[in-house]
Image (cartoon, rainbow, N blue to C red; front, side, top):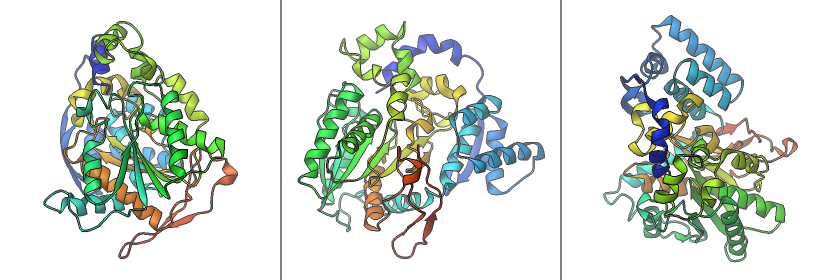
Length: 413
């Protein structure tokens, strides 16, 4: 959805993008995933290929990395800390540190393991999951909240057509919510909130799935439902790359010369409501008052690309944002994560999640939620909850043959 904005910004961004960007080739196995790409610094290459494998042969780099690890152990990564690491060393080094921090956060390993297992299970079928032996429980409804221009530009996948088809093939009931494809976050949130309350009268279990711009819309809708004290049946929300704090690119798209290009080629002479609602000031103001129902489990699914893995559509935005830390070509990675929730971070994907099996990954996320809810893991401290409402440590229980992991730390906004 922001591809055209990226093109519009290209002219004004050229001075920022000019220069020799180091492209150091690496081949490494990171968390069981083979990574073959290029990175932007020697320290990032050493960290990926040597340090994380336990090979310490560069004392001067080892010392820098050790200090960074200690800092991230003492407190969770912050935007300012990651920005400093990006400017002092490189964006790829900061991205790898963030990826590792998320992978080792006590809240995240279990959900990541379940997700990986579900994805592998579906992919082992010759038909990539269209007819798998495990049937989706009929007492669950999956409500998909589409992304920007999902009607006029369905080729972007914003309408979730492929994952909905795969889920229906395994017996899942799905609904695509009808929202204004170029409406403001606030107006669409009102529609979503009304739909949540209405479904609460007829459904026992609802799973929300959203992507990109729909992320802040769902967050605001759930907050509205909580404030209204109306009953609902939402058990979980899968937040795929939600632009929760907006994007600097939206700020830039409203200035000149980008504004005229966006007006002509992105919104076809239509309203600026959608873009204006994703400006950083407006988005941060919304996020500050976000208060989700504490009983709703939130799973964030984010991509963390290295510089050599950024797609053409995300490249301009990536370089515009790189001095401020790890980003996916549209916004900072941390701005897509709700504190207190659980996160699955995929190394190598940018904001457009351009992966041939992304629809299968979305289905695997749905199964992951089912496993969590079925094993009574809801109750994690949720965004916006006051400190005294944080529940005691809970046990996240995996299905048989897997280990039990204790959730020792839950953060609140």
